[in-house]
Length: 385
Image (cartoon, rainbow, N blue to C red):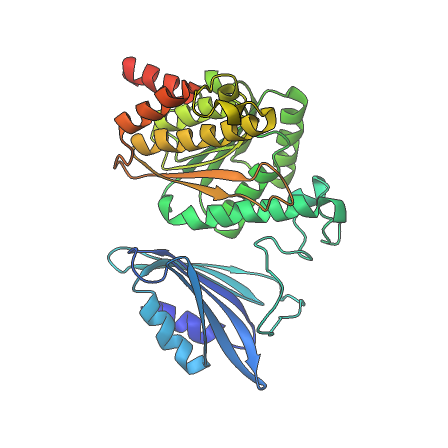
């Protein structure tokens, strides 16, 4: 760990901007630590924001204390990112304790460091720092300011990157990572994924975006070529028919309409993709199927039934994924004030089945439903996929 100690000594000075420790080796203790500079009575200290048990704890450490603190904490973390005004470090620690350091020099930044204790939220892609794809997509002006009418989109992109940041330890860092984005549309988030993983995190990543709109696909490929994103490709095609790859590490499906989400999830399960991130949209299928004598009075209100059907659809999807060996969560993607399509299904493959087939069947019978995902997964088993 002498290498880490040396980097900390060189970086934690007046030039220091931020550090993130992530990829915990165990579920006990801290799951992530964010460090930033803070001035306390004119003394420069380092505020450590520790995330554990769904809570956040803070402590301020001096320059001398921070060295010992990080050295101790890195026994439980696989990676650390450190950013100063002149350099950016990506530090990886193997199971055997081997330390690999990637260093990238950057032009000395002139942006002011906010040393206050309570500051406004910082985004992964920050306002004021030019990001070419955001400029071309109309989210950011040429000087790096976020277009006021696009701020919800800017916030959504950053929120999605936070989910990516959380699952980074699940993705291999020693080989090419393959990601499929089904129903990519204008590809705000597809470009954001590539920029974050390849440019900021230095992952060897290949991303394929798939959509039915020929003009959108053509425009996205033009942009990818313009930025030199050689491993970002966009293809015209249908989710259900796609067979272009044999192994996939992560499947993303964002606002794929109605049962298109189910086809994407079934594909992901077939590949045993390590990570699935899905933001469903327009869940109409079960609204036409749901029946229950006891709940009939509630179902008589069209709006209520429609919303219940959407929630049941996503809950059942999560249960099917658990049954297939995925640790699955349903999370709030972004606040309802910004978009009603605010549910994200996050699934990480563990191989441990977490849902009971009999319980799932009882739910289906009670509501008289047969979701598309259930049918697709059953077909895959029958054909031996």
